[in-house]
Length: 232
Image 1 (cartoon, rainbow, N blue to C red):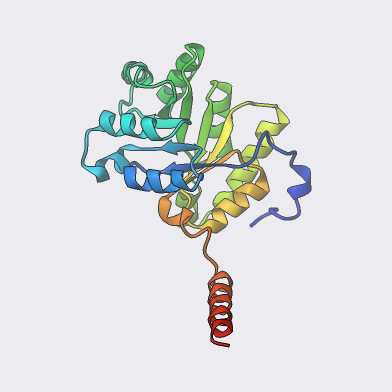
Image 2: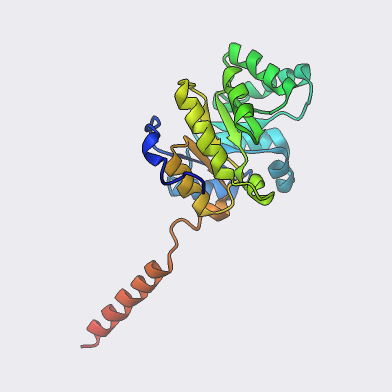
């Protein structure tokens, strides 16, 4: 990845450790990850909600009962007034709700208004550093660059994270970087090395973090030796 290792020394430490958000609307997955202490927040989107086959607001309320952290709920309107109407309604559900808005001109306008009203926002579907800069200037609480989708079209998604983190540090923006569209554990490792604030992770990827073939081999070796010692 371009400049990942050689430029690490140029990045200043972000405030606090890398946070893990769970990118899901599945209550069982959230409970399982929460029991491991690996959930600092949750991000949802219309596609994830649709997979569950349940009412949108019911799912959001259920998540808020489990996780005491930012819970992103996305608006589906494409015009400013529609976004604002949805956002204000969603914000009333729970104090931890963060309004997810698309990276469009109307989304940026809505972000500015919501920021002025004290409602947290997460500008999503970000694919360029200038989009992230616009979101920060509009007062976004979070910005979500989709790295996996960039990888899918033969662009290095982590380069985008590197650029956004550098820009935000250059001008001391308080907008937090959520690394989204995470496809594998390496994406999370590189996010931590680059100083991103948050990685939002599918449960299937999070579950891989604790696994390593040498760990499994070591456990089997210890158990084998223990069983041998009992027969002596």
